[in-house]
Every structure is written in C-alpha cells, then in structure tokens.
Length: 305
Image (cartoon, rainbow, N blue to C red; front, side, top):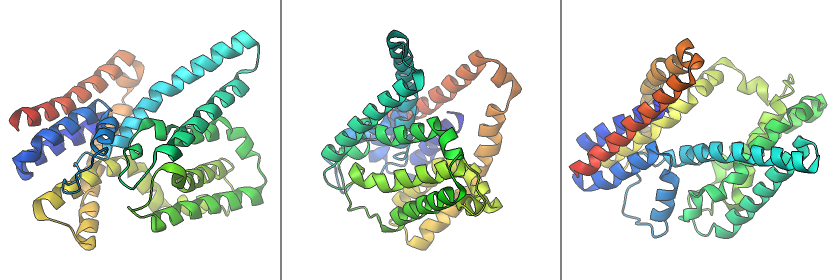
C-alpha cells in the first residue's frame, strides 16, 4: 500500500503538470479507484463501450493490483468455509479445501472463456475471469511437498518447459488476441510450472538461469518497477506524442531510478520496521493513511478538472 499510493500521488502531480485539463476528471477518478483497489471494475465498465481515441490512463495498470487485493479477501473466506465444511463432515481439511478451490477455478475459467469476446473485451479486467489464475497459484502453494519430491529429471524438464511457455506468450501474443479466456492458460500454467519446479531447487533447472544475481536484483525490484514504468510511459506519450520503441525503452530504463528509491526508502523501510511488525494497529494505520493519501490526490484532480 505505501509504495502503490506514493506512485498514485506522484502520478496525480505529473498529470496536473503535463496532461490536458480535459482528462483530469477521468484520471482523478481512476486514481481514487486505484487507491480503493476497485479500478478493474471501473475499467471493465469503460471497456464495455471503448473509445479508441482515448489514451490509456496513467494508472491503468492498477487494475491487476485491484484483482489481487480482492483475491486476498476471497481466499481467507474460502479457507474458513472449507474449515467449517470439514468440521461438519468429519473430512480432512486439505481435500475439502482443494475441492473448493478446484470448483472455484473451474467456474472462473468457464466464465472467462465464455465472456472473453474481442481484444477490447471488458472481461480482461473482471475479477471473475481472473480468479482461476490465482487459484492455480494457490494450488501450487498447497502442493509444495509434492513438487519437492519429484525426480530431478522431471523438475528440470518442468521448469524449462514452463519458462519456454512464458517466453512464447511474451513474444507471440498480440493486442488483437482475445484475452484472457483459454489463451491465458499458456503464461499462467507456464509460470506455475516454473514455481513448482523451483520447489525442488534442482541443479540444471530453470532456477539456474533465474537465480543469477542480475535477474534476482530485477526480481526484488519488480513490484516497484511495475508500479513506476507505466505512469512514466503513459504521461510521456500524452505530453510528447506516440513514443518510438527506443524512446519507450529509455523511459522504462529511467523508471528504475524511482523504483529503486521507492523500494529502499518506502517499501523496505516500512515492511522491515520492528515497530510496524510488532503492532498490527500501527501497520493498519499506516496502510490506511497511505491509501487515503492516494485517494485524496485523485479527489484533488477531480475537483480541479
């Protein structure tokens, strides 16, 4: 929450300075929705009747954080339901939880496939079409012991095959493809395979490549990079016009600087603070305070529009 809302506040300032006033109201609303982790539903409504002339919002990428936070509410409720069912039926908890998770994933995948129609489908942003992707990750986490006991040749092949699937998705998927739908299975299952194979820490596997220092450094910084790169690209494109590939890569490279600063002086300072870790009340207060800061930045843009 702290890092995300620092980015929302900064984005609001740069929108005020660099983006035409006619867009302040919409972007201000997006920032408020981003701070409340509801932006995905706002964008789903917008993309029901998309305007191809409207540039992307500089905080549009917060849709996935909204899905993630909503999942953090659904998953504990599912666990509590499984616990209650296991007690009533006398069954073991893990099979009950796995069954509930499987049913939820199957329903979400079916909904995703049937509602994903066209490249500009609102289904892209809906939580209901994405639950199955998160459920796959939960399933991998529940089965750590199984993955850790796989034979070495199996984990080596599984890891490299998963990494290949992710790279194929990165290099071959286009904006004209229907997504998520069944198309999302390739990167989702590929990612799950890489993580599952990594549970065995097998030499010669994909972890050999992914574990080198430069990639671990990028991995540690990835959340902050995710937060910063898109607002910088979107605002630069609004101010200077469409960016060339080289200019876009330069902007992304420049986003490393604020990402590093946020990672070390906001994110890590708070999450590794002894006082914060010992006081849930303080932790919740800090989270709520930063969320209010981001929301107020959006409200200010709305009022100024």
